[in-house]
Length: 500
View 1 (cartoon, rainbow, N blue to C red):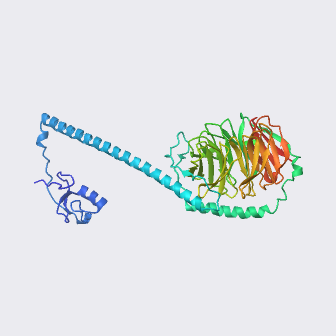
View 2: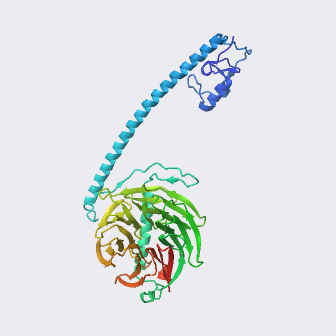
View 3: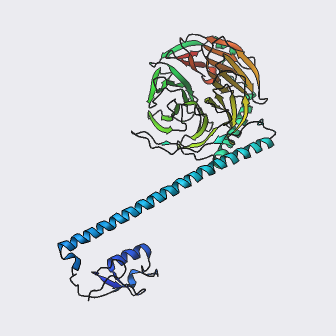
């Protein structure tokens, strides 16, 4: 008599064996596979090993055909039955899918409602903290609100991944920022007591002479110098390209292509052969100068990126955007760590700049405000009103106390961060457009680029230089080491160097 594999296949086994645990007959091949995965008897769940199985010796019978499969009508009936069963099963699955979809939709609505409640509570908690923090100038300000990030999108066509989920400001990151700020503050206070001996004197600035490099682009929109080697010049143009130029060799080192719109902000990393660029195409790109390729695309914003600033650690990027948010991103991973807006203002951000110590930063807005933010708390701690027209450029002095700002009102304003007030306004010619502001490393000079180039000596705030050789708007100015030279770029497609 044929022995049937009792539980697993319900068929006549070729190699039957008995489990002493449950006294059931199994096909050896099947029970061995089950033991390998679970280590138990399938009938009662008791521990079972292969060694315990007892083989059964049987003469292999010839399997009889089922009576239902002995005629064509019977076979057709069998197939019809199976088809009906499959259709019924399919209908059941469709019903289950519909039910699951409805449950998921309900869960998403609940999640969204919970997020709104959390956001409101966070706002109330922050407002309460601000009311208690009497030492900070935070009265009457609405707390900024962090946003949920969109899903990451895989880059196509060989592009790096575009990652936008937020990781958050972990305690480790905040500690890293604090440690760096402590070092920088100490260094700055030491440096503030003496002016570098190598610094070019104000009376010698008038000896600056121009050297010229014409770039074959329809307008240069952004400029930066490599901090560790100020002979390396980085420019971004209306032709969507980022260009690295060597002043000594008088030749282009790298032309970096990838943005789909003009490049409006560029930064050279202080210690690595890496540069950063931002564009109205909503992206920030990280480039390898030696490789000549894009290594990260940071998609932190939903509208054009208007400002870019590198943290003093060299590990994080600050960006501002027309989407009203500023974002803080990790350059190694391309991930957005936090993204914040001031809901009470509801206005596009036009520029962004870190304070030299890296714990606070400033943003300019399209409605003439300069906002100062605390990076660790992600809160707006001060506002500087006074300009009219969108803010076009902001620059912190290396002394850590002064902030220079320019807007579309033909004026420069100097702010004292200790007293939180405007202590000097420099009114420029009618219709003068301020496009770029930069202090030199010692905080002795302030250069202004726009309708022309002007250099002011700090403290007296008197003009010591004026260059008018650009035939278009000057979009970027930068000082070489110890103000040994000044470089500028403009809409006339030229990069100029003024040196002793």
